[in-house]
Length: 171
Image 1 (spheres, rainbow, N blue to C red):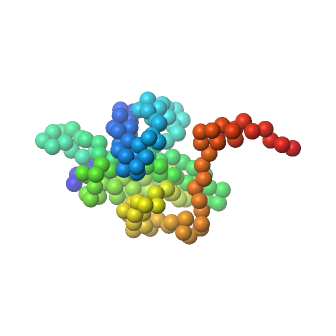
Image 2: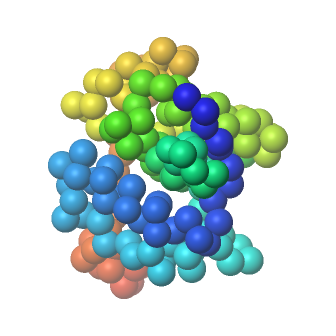
Image 3: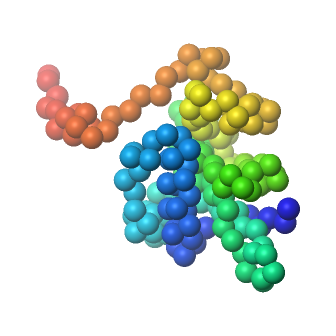
């Protein structure tokens, strides 16, 4: 299948927003999506963006236009052990376009960006029940740190983040 991978633009936010919701439905968490298309535009397409994104397009049938069928959203992080790093937040391909190498093309393109930016590593999270994705990344050489290093993902959000931010340090 002919696929075009390119950097997302502000115009793509509507499609990215749609696919974020599709991904959330697949992950059985559609009620967790709170981001709006406008927030994606604001946070990804200004002078100091919080994220970058690639989109996958395929030609529309019998037309010269393209249809956006996948995306990879990532941002930069820093490892005190390894230096520059990248976190892949989401990689998604619409179900009817899976099995044509589009996910591999997106992942390869993200890895190329990471190498161009001299990142030492690319990391991501995968749900424990999503064996198809875990197998996909493992086949590409990804290491499962849950098993290898016993790391756990922890999060502060909502009221716990508010409480932490407002807590007065004790001397």
